[in-house]
Every structure is written in structure tokens, then in C-alpha cells.
Image (cartoon, rainbow, N blue to C red):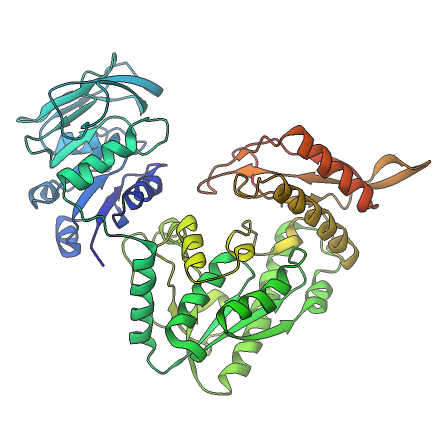
Length: 514
């Protein structure tokens, strides 16, 4: 696999988005911390480097800096926003607080026949977010773009291999942003556009075969797309050496347990051990209303159940590896964005006992969520699994405000199923990132159904749109769809007599209620 592009993270909201845009240009990308040394960069031998934005000012004490030796390695470098300013400072240019800030949509003018703006208009809309500006370009560099309040909005070296922009080409509001990035990546830096999800699947399969050999492997299936795709890759590599464990804790949405037990097995041929633990979880959750306590109980019971299943499987022959569906955002957010190995040695997973030690296989740790879905489709997984909405680990246990009981789970499942059916019917499945349904189980609402007065439960529907889960906006569902959802739920789920809509963004509100 090509070494691709290193995205040096200076603390930007958009570092992951830059990495995604690079991959959209069919070039592999990897996020690394700004503390990376020139020696470490050299060892990775990337095709190019992109410096991300960040919240700091380059001239203040303890501001993140770029190792100047990186710029002497002969590797093409592209700076964005703070990365542009950090590169400027390292090259001997000047960054100043001018008293003029730019935030949001801004117009720039292009000049001096720049390479990075090839095939884009001389005047274009871009997205700015800065309070400092480059006031003097490094010696020998040509200024190639400017705005009203930012005379140096871009510059590049004579060959274009060292270049930068003050704005954010990675966001969709920069109308020619992806063209600018591709111009530099492909035409200037000469990166090879050979990255595809198919490549990484082939690479991972080969790697797993080599490392696992004839050893046995276990995988815990959650019902979500990540663990399903991870298991499918491993199964493709080693066949019946893999055993999957599905703990049916009774907290999944309607039809999801059956999808794992039947559809997933049919599509992959994987050996699956199903543990029916519904009563165990309900008993443990009885009388518990505190959300954090519910989370801890569900986590504890899952570990106990998985441990017992793992021991049972291990009794039939030693199991050395555990598969996890860790994604690239998980790696970055846990501080592992410095290129940790694909397989960690003797990782004690999720609080499992010390005598249950596994080597960890994470075949998705280089991928984003949308890439995982593509891989799942390539591997022949059912679309119902691949395109399933993200779902919290504790499942419906944290979508019931109050005690979790069999009756309340049944009410929530029926309401949730109607919602999902109507969103599907309206063709909104992929437009809406997810839509939790929350049962306000401790609240009663006066209603009228038929000729009688009712005292039923309210529910909340929470449609949200997001690319990264870090932020989310509430989805503007058409009124006719909302009407169908509300009417069907109150007609078909008699215990519910009021449907409410959560129109809070994240922040300030989280996606889940508990």
C-alpha cells in the first residue's frame, strides 16, 4: 500500500475532514500529531504532507510548532490556515495580528498563474476562519491569492511543492476546495491516486492471514455495521478459524437480533455462537433509573457474558486473537493517531479478566464510517446491516428515561420500528444520519383516544444529520412525514399518546438523551 499523505494535526476541528478529502482524491491519508519529528516523518516516507488548521496563534508562548527540519526533507508540504501560518513562521515569514478577522464565506482573487488554482475561476468563494494573518511571505515565495482583509491568502514556491492557503479548502463552502486539493496532490506533489477501499481490504486480508496463521480467533458482534464488517474481513481471510459471539441482551431494536443470527450468517458463512442473555440483563437493570448506573450495569453484564462464551470456545482449543471494529476516528480520538500497529500485542480488552489475554485485530482502524459501509457492500453484507443507523452500545437501555422493563422495551421497539419504516418509505434513510426514539417512561401525558381520556407516555423523536458525530444538526423532516410518524405511532402503539420532536443541535444537546 502506498505511504500516502501525512495530515499533521494542529488541533483543528477539520483534521479528520482533510484526511477524508485526501482519500476522496484516491490518495491514502494518515493523521499524525503536531509533535512529530522530522526523523519520524522521514521514517514514514510519505508522498506528501498537509498541515491542518488549529485554534492557537503561532506567535504566542507554547503554541504548537512545526519541526523546521520537516521542510528540508524534500517532501511536498501544503499548509492550511494555522498550518499555513506555522509553515510561514518556520520558513522565516511573518504572521501578525492585524485586527482584521475573517470568519465564514469570503471572496478571494487569484493572481500570478498559481499551480494550485489551476482550472478554477479568478474570483471564487472560500471559507475563512482566522484572526491572524500572514503579513510577509517567506523569501522566494509567490503570493497567489488575496481577499479584501487578507492580502496573502495563498502562496507557493516556484515549483508549487511548498504551498499553502489561509482558508479551508476541505469544507464544502469553499466552492473549488476539492479541485485545489487535487491540483496540489496529483499534479504538483505527484501523489499516486491508487487508494481504494478494495485495496485496503486486500491488504488487511493478506496481513491477517500472515499474522494469524493457523491460530483461532474470536469476535464479539454487537449488531452494528462496524463489528459486522470487521468480522466479514477476518472470515474472508481465515474462514472457520473465526468464531463470532453474539450476546442478545434484549436491548436491540426490532428485527436486529434476527438480522445478525440469520442474514449475517447467510451472507458470510461465519460460525456464530448466540448467547440469549435477555433475562439476565433485565434482572440486573431492575429498579435502576440513573443513566450512568444503567450504562455500567449493561457493560458489566456484557463482559461477564462474553467472558463465559470466550472461555467455552477456548476450551475447544486456544484462542489467541480478538477482532474489534475500531474505526479511524476512534483511533485518533483516543490519542492513537500516530500510526499505532494494526495488531496490538496482549491487549486486555474492555475489562476482561487478566487470564483472558488476546492479541487484537482491528481491520478497520484505517477507515472512516462511510468507507466501512463501502467495504461491507463489497463483501456482500446485506444493505440492512451496512446502512443501519449508528446505535449506542447500551442500546435501548439508554433510550428509556427511567427504569428498563420488558414492557417499556416493547413499547419503544414498536414506536421505533414505525419511525424507521416511515423514514425508509420517504427515502430519507441516508439523508438522516440517525433518529433515536426516546421513551419518557416516568412521564405521563393526558390525551384523548376514541371517546375516552388517556394517560399515556410521551415519546421524543430525535432526527439528526452529521458527518463526524462530534457535532450534529437536527434534520428538517417534511411535515407530511412527521404527520405520518405521529399518526401511526399514536394509533398503533396505544400506550403512547403524544409524539414530540427534538430540534436541538449538538452542541448543546447530545444525540442520545441519556
